[in-house]
Image (tube, rainbow, N blue to C red; front, side, top):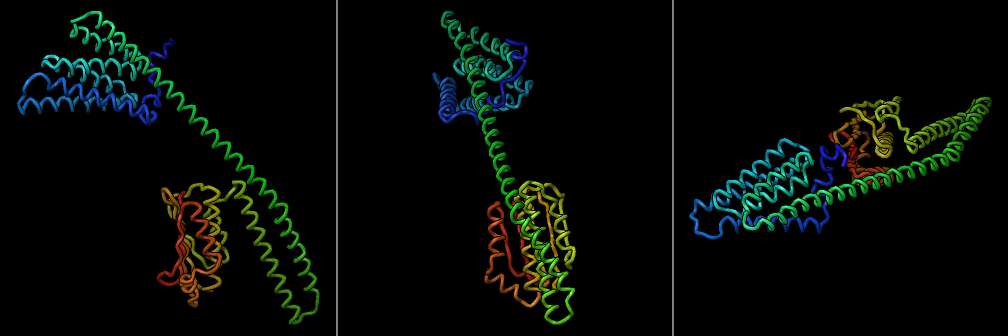
Length: 387
């Protein structure tokens, strides 16, 4: 056995109750119930007791139980001095019970201290503590030295076997956690590879198509400008310029979607300020900005775009306020306007259009909520998603 094995604690998984199976938990609680019953029986058996003696006996048993629970907690936290102090209190309680004539509770406490010290403490502290507890038990139990010797050896063996069993269980839990982490990492890698593949496909098809459209539309604009001025020519030119502008915006949004698929997302607040650079919109950012996942960032961006589109459709000329709040466990986005021709209220009541439905679906897929309806002046869209 290496020197480190004498000074090291059992692993946290070995000392934790949560790592035990249901069958082990049932056995453990059954043993504790049996020991408690034995202590109560040993305290009150063989005599008549008045109310005061009964209260003192129950208080003593309850106090020993509380100290034992505290000992289990301090050992789980790897606090050596408090653990040894609590162990000493249990041994002193055993001496007190033996002096009061309650030999059975004293033996239970000494044997329990011997086994748990060897199971839960570093061996450098557990072995001496076990020796002290078993030494006290040997001094008290002088009826049959052979039985006492066998019991003492059995308790030592039981404590060490429980320690090895707990370590094996803790190692199994650590291996299981590592395997789960490896599976999660593998799944994330596969998802990232799939996103990269989709991003390449979108770039090769949609981005190239939009770029080609912009080139042709720009060429068409130059050709139309060479023609003599007229009403028909001006209308066609206006349509071509609008189509080119829409193609440029579509290409920009496609590039943003590609960046999100690859995990290369710019800060949301920066995107919002770029989005409203040409609009009479105020952007407020509250809380401490932090990096968001691609899904959450994309949801915030799309909701902001859809809400601004609805403002342009149903409340042209209205003043708009975008408030982005970084909360400890979530991110909140609110887009409010001062109202226009009243169409916003009709939209809120009907809930028509794919825009609001799509925004709600995005929020729900991320475990968040989206509310849209009339505000104090105009229309308000509120998004909240965990982040």
